[in-house]
Length: 357
Image (tube, helix red, strand yellow):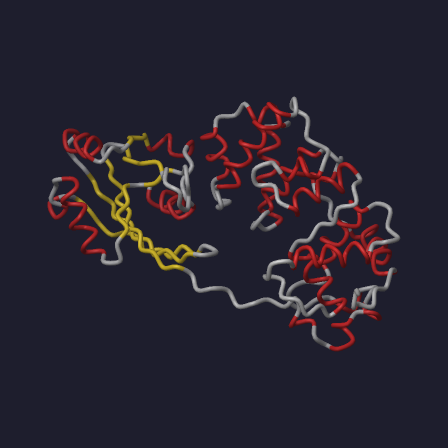
């Protein structure tokens, strides 16, 4: 039995608010599934203002799924610089290729087909299905979790298994009298972003406040219910930025790990930086003390599940002979500094290059 007291005016009130307050977003100009999909992938873990800038850049370069499928993967990584979570960029290309090959370049219209695409989960599939194809699929993101949790006083931990389906069912019942589910989904997300914000929600102008559990009970700050995040795994990266006459030595991350398929400097992962330097000497056969070197940067990179302390050592190799010996012995690639922008690096290395090239 469904335990919540559902007010069917909730959805209608959200749509009334949306009619005069919706955000003017570039991917809302039409209901092109390619544009909706691209925007949703870019906006994952990304602020709206930043995401729009990248969206416009990608649409200009790749106006449709065909042009994206034909792109060089390295070009996509380069354009993705600064967004992080590079698996999203990898999946962009994979999905575009699959649509071109298996769907003749036309975005699939069926929800189950959308779910089969790399990087497309329930949220993105529901967004495309409802907004572009008028299917009754319900989008659940952080904004929707928050709005529904507060409105009904939902005690369910949103990080627990099954919470997505639970909130999806609630949203479905709340919108029973709504014909355009795509519009309802967009309205709910905008409402959560602009009115029912994580901190200091603007309850005074909310047209659902009279029936809102959290407003009535003054419990806005405790919803949605979340479990405490697990402790991040600690790692220690020592990067050696080896330079010679306008060139760097780099390598591609090919193992199943963070930043897969991105480039980096020669890496030694060791908590003890002195041990890392000693190992660098052994690997290169060079005495770092006799080279122009400096530890120029120590950064902390916080990922969702890992905390990475990063040391950068700037190594200047004067003799070409030594530079190419290191390149060969460590199986590295050389790149001109002026070509750096064309290569995809993790954000922490992008920041290093920004201030030290």
